[in-house]
Amino acid sequence: IARDQWNSGWVEFYFQHMYKNIADCFNRPIASAPDASVDVVTRERSGGLWFRPLHDFQCTSSTTTCVNLASYNYLGFGGVDEFCTPAARAAALESGFSAGGTRTEGGTMPVHLELEKQIAEYLNKEDAMVLGMGFATNSAVLPALFEARAGGAGVLVLSDKLNHRSIVEGVRLSGATVRAFSHNDMGDLEAQLRRAAEEGQPGGKPWRKVFIVVEGIYSMEGDFCRLREIVTLKNRYPDAYLYLDEAHSIGAVGATGRGVTELLGVPTAEVDVMMGTFTKSFGSAGGYVAASKEVISALRRNAPGSAYASAMAPPCAAQALAALRLITGEIGGSVGAQKLAQIRDNANFFRTRLEEEGFKVLGDVDSPIVPVMLHHPNKMAKFSRACLERGIAVVIVGYPAVPVLYERVRFCISASHTRQQLAEVVSTVTEIGRSIGVLFEKSISRAE
Ligand code: PMP
Image (cartoon, rainbow, N blue to C red; front, side):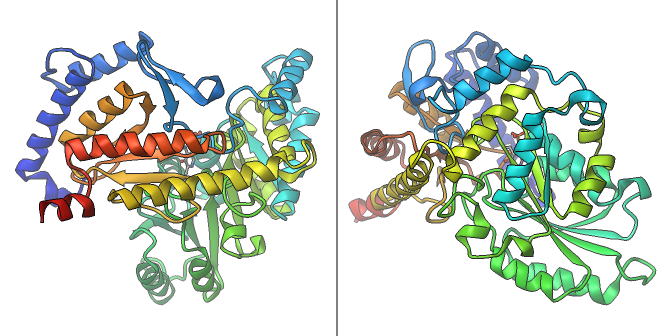
């Protein structure tokens, strides 16, 4: 929350409602202090009320079976399936779950090497490195990239204001100077690049490197980074580099799933460092970074999350590899291509239908993340509870993930949703939206 918003009555108002909503959600007396409210949530979670994805793309609470629009499972490989699950199972039976060491201390297995080779080929990069955790891929790679050992000296990072926490952590750890630019605002980015070139470091020395750090799809907004413009701007400055986090876009968008570079027609050679995770489209765990041989070999030595952490669990690597092979069509015939077409059709159908019903929908066409504005803290719990009662699992996003009065519900679309499921969800959430007053055009015309 911005400092200048903090003194207003909104904050007190917001917290009062938040506690009440949390308490209401779980049929508990109102929580009076932050700690108490957190307790209510965690206790209920551990009791199993909280929904999590299960097979068949359904999820259950203690009372309801839900259509799951809460989880990242873009291609539907996150459950049990006939291609990835047997590969992961075979890896577990062959190697167990632990890699048993870091990559340099006996933890490297053929499946890691194959996954790295195939990721590099898929992205048309010279080399790739995989890590056991997506978050740690950013938080460990960025400091190594920005030469944290040298205190990040002379490195300036221009970071989109809405970048994920893992990026923020990595940049902070690196010790580099960081300046945030307004989300997807090319005027601001250009001004910051110009300022960096004109002013240099405090004291006047030129910056050694300027890194622009962006995401492919922003997970709270559902929009794509403006990659073409970013690349054009970057190319005007000789010491500028681009780091792209494709956690949500790899395997989810582009004709062959290659993410925003493919979707927006930008050669991957224009992106210096490409990062992604295996937790979304690949239905696994872990992350990758792909770049030139020189960069990857430096990262292998210097990124603490690679050099000092146990290697990715073999079944996770096998699951990610099988998903990648499906996407490229190496196995499963046309299954991968069908999934990619399906997620695009599903996402665009869902987005268009919600807009037609009068919801204020954020994000871009083709994005599988479809956020809808609720605009009011009090409507968050009502909306979420009504959805759960009607068999729909969604994620409600409020402060501090988004500013107060920018509350929203986020629908994550999967290739595994059927058209009928999505059509039914639209009609149910329209009823809910109407009853709690979050529809726009239609409610206005009714009032007229
Ligand atoms: N980057 C982005 C943009 C993310 O949204 C996330 C998590 N959703 C991560 C990195 C971290 O990935 P993981 O959940 O695989 O650890």
